[in-house]
Length: 487
Image (cartoon, rainbow, N blue to C red; front, side):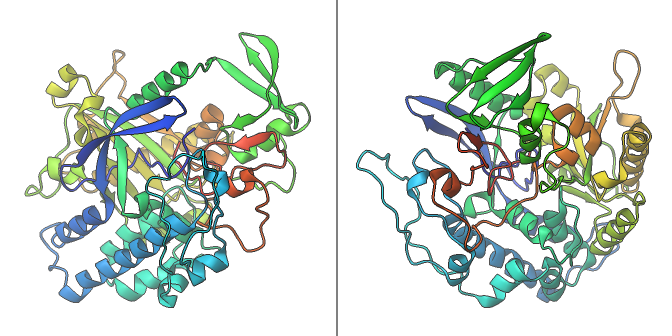
């Protein structure tokens, strides 16, 4: 079971990443995958400095403004190093013996983690025992009590750099910089956790390498995997009803590990798998459109002095100035499609060439993944989904073309039928195909890296953050407390 903030689809590379093999053990079995380690904060600083003259027309950033960037990100990193340790139990087979941290403890800080474990418990490699207090009231208020827009506007004065920072707070989350619910703050923290250092681990060979390793480890452990099956209902005592090749089957287990969004789990638990979960369950909402492109080559940029290899090697921010993001949020909140659509691009074939066959890579072909922001699910319905998909595709391509020296359409590969190799997924497409309610890529609202004061922590499942209303059913995916993995 893998949980936690695994943002494998988002690549931030300013230099060649380090690589290492990671092995995760499950009893006698292990999962091994080669990881490329990326430094998020280093990349952010490199990108900001590189943007000092984005179109050969802007003056270099003044020193005081650049100096505020380390303060904003260093403050968040310092806080997150502590939050990573004092938050919900670290993922591990012996985590039920640990006591998670409450909001009050997180604010005051902990001097040690009090825990009891049996003599037979595995060694807790890397577990932080001594933890500094968060301490700095300004940092605490800025990230946990006040909208993150305030600290961005206080310490950063350039519209471009403000926007780059704000994107970390709104990817997959429909929020403005000053929303009072602080959903943007939580999203910002998740995007910078990275093991407490800002490093992200990306599987070499793409997500296929990870799923292949998962499959191998599961089979070695004796797991029976049944594809082409759909669970239609669950009972609180652990009875699962599913469809396989047109036939209905049932199986009962002592524990059910539900790797589905909590909203979907409630639907499965309702009578006969009703499509309407209890009214107390709020339906999640995604706020992004994803466009995948297969290119014959990378396009030229408007600025001929900038190499496409350099521009696409990191995160390519397009129309994501702070003011543009806030305008797009207001436009989408009013039910309209932003113009231009704020976008960012990840070129995974530059980050990891192994995702393409050697023959295809030799032709100069590349993949682009474009995330369009502030396209909330509330504006997409079953009736308008097809037309909205077309509008969103055009809007994303127009946004991309605004910074290119040639139309992106000229370098999009064609399939055997002569159709352009473009795949666009709306939030409704994600819900229909992957059962991600509202197209929310996190399976639901993200949570703070601690439990709220007074929350029950009596059972191991509650301390893990995987508890449901029924003791026999546990959440094991991104919807777990502190989950947040991108599906």
